[in-house]
Image (cartoon, rainbow, N blue to C red; front, side):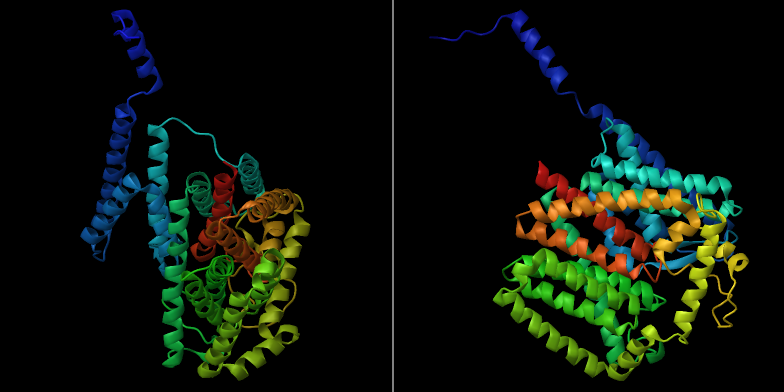
Length: 482
């Protein structure tokens, strides 16, 4: 039977339906281009104004070129731009903004501002989308609400507002990954964006130790000018070590020993950093891996790599000459006269006093350093007693600064993250995705334990890894549940 050509009315109906089903992308693309051009122009104008008013000349052309190139990358491959921020994180340095009393982590935070602005432009130019993981997103919004409540009652409002803005832009970083990373190709790039900089940092520190460019009293590590103290250094590399171990245990093939070597390089630097909280985090990581990957750990290949890694670790410790120092530092964990232990008791006592003074709302998010002297009751007379520092505990920080309201919101967010991690690790069968999930969840375990005695979430070195791990778990969950 011959099929004839549709009549004029039929063709008109088909054309009208086709146009309704597939709208032209020209309109959103044009709006996105206009908004982007406006954004770039605003950045250039701001840089020009800063250059004109600065007493010291800055390399404006180089800075401008880098920002324009990064902004264009944000337009063409926004997800890659966000992963580039992750890769740049361990190499950022703090720069004080003259006359403001504030500082920026350069280049991490300027890159983050541009990327978030580009995300906003893209969202305005396109149709709005529903946020993925609504339970976790709602819990994070509740946590933000608790922070805002604490700001309304604090006596240190300016400090609280600054700390809130700092927390919000890092949280938005994680929210972007949560919503835009659920693609296998992007998740594969993620591992390399995390591991390659970690390897570079580990080798840089390792070589510095072997040539004697370090200070044994503060740790057998050396990562200046990127890391100015051993706590953030060890906490960051703990994430790298956990990710490398997760991939090495779960995967097979030629990359398996490569990941094992990365774990050895980064883990050895964590041990040599003389950071007791990070040591405890690695112990917790080992227990976590036994629980979630116990059967795979007893495979011959993993056992062989583990034995070789242990021998290599012992060899690195002996070659560095750190054996006696490690033994001495291990004994100080329970030493009540140790300076670090005394100062932690001092800081924790002040934090608990803040919680008692305002149990519901706390003294204000980010206000602990300003409120510290008013609540310090134990005159320990150490050389750190009057320094402006944090509370040395992420958990006590939440209680002291946001009270029971903030603690409840944080616990709810933690519940959703733990539930997502459990679901992903149980349901993911692909070796790479499972290894990635185990690795980033293990990284959160290391800092969850380390955070008992330290608090580093105000810094990009830890905020970005933590939010990257949360966003990665949520993205893998989305991918595996489709």
